[in-house]
Image 1 (cartoon, helix red, strand yellow):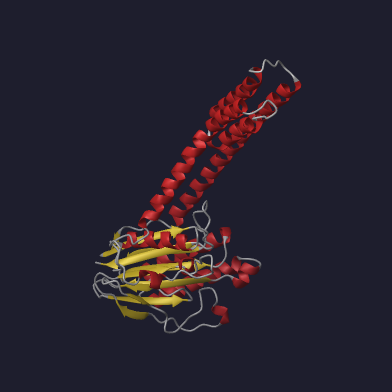
Image 2 (tube, rainbow, N blue to C red):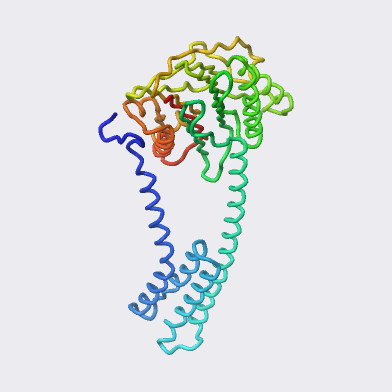
Amino acid sequence: MRPGDVAGDGPYTGAGARAGRRLSKLRMLLQVLPALLIVGGVFYDLLTPRGFTAIPFFTAAPLVAAPVYSLCGTAVTGVVALIAAYGVHARFGFGLDADTVTEVVTVATVAVLATVINRVVRRGDQRLASAREIAEAAQRAVLPEPAARIGGFDIAARYEAAQADASIGGDLYAIQDSPHGVRLVVGDVRGKGMGAVAAVAIVIGAFREAAEQEATLEAVAGRLERALTRESARREGIEAVEGFTTVVLAELPHGDGVVRIVNRGHPPPLLLYADGGVRPLPAMEPALPLGMSELGSRPDRAEKTVFPRGATLLVHTDGLSEARDEHGVFYDPQERLTGRVFRDPGALLRTLAEEARRHSGGGMTDDMALLAVRRL
C-alpha cells in the first residue's frame, strides 16, 4: 500500500466531497447575488455624483435571479429592482423626467425578460429531467445493477457516461451465475447513439442465454458472434460494414480458484492481488472483435489463470485507459493501482472513476464501463 493511502478508497476519495462543497458555495453565492446587486446599486448611486447611474446593477439582478430562483422569486426581484431604480432618482426630487423614465423602462423590460428566461429554463430543466429519467430507465433495463455477491464472489459494476447528461451508450457489462461457473462479459460497441444501444441489448441478450446453455466459454463467444452477424445484416450504410464490438468474456468455475478468459480485441483485464500487486492479463493469441468474422477468423481459445483468494479481477473498457490529461498523457490503471489495497470492489470502482475524471480534467471523451469481481 502506498504511503498515505487508506485501505478502501485511495488518495482521491475526498475530491468528490470537495467539489461538492465548492458547488454548494457557488449556489449560495448565486442565491444572494441578486440582493447584493440591488443593494450595491443603491449605495453606488448614493455615493457617486448625479451624472453616474446604477442601472447596470438593477438590470443584472433579475437576470441573475432568472436561472436560480422560482418564477415568483424572479418576479419579486424584478419589482424590487424597479422600485430601487426609481427610488434613487426620487431622492433628488425628480418626477418623470427623461432619464428616470428611460432607466425605469429599461429595468422593467429586463425584469419581464428575466421572467420569460425563467420559464424557458424551468421548462428546459423539466424536459432534461424527463429525458434523464428515460435514459436511466433504459440503463437499468439494459445494464441492471448486479447483485453484490454472486456464486461466492463479491461483485461491483459501474457505468460512467462521457457526457454529463447521458446515462447509456455503447459500453456494456453483464454477469451471472451458471452451471459452469460465474460468467461475465464487458464490451464496447463501435459507434454511438441508438444503433450502439441496440447492439448493446443484442450482445447482452445473447450472452444471458448462451452463458446458461453453452458448456464452454468459446461457445459463448461464438453465440455472440452469430448474434451480431445477424444484426449487422439488418443495418444499412457504414454501420453494416464497419460495425464491431470488442469484448472480454470470463468464466470463474465454482471452487477451482482459476479464471478463464476469451478476449476479442478488448483492453486486457487486470488481476489485483491482496498484497497490492497488479498483473495484466493480455491475450496470448489476439483475436478480432465480434462482428468482423468476414475478415478472417480463428477458433477462440480460453486462457486460464490462477485466481487466488482475496484477488480481484478488474475488467474495463477503453474509456478508462484512454482518458487523457491536458498534455495528452493516458491514464494508466495498472500503474495507478499498483501497491494499493481497496476495501471492496465498489471502493475500487469509485476510486477509478474519480481518478479518471480528475486525470482528464472532468472532460471524458468516451464512456467507461467497469466490472470488478473479488474472490472471497
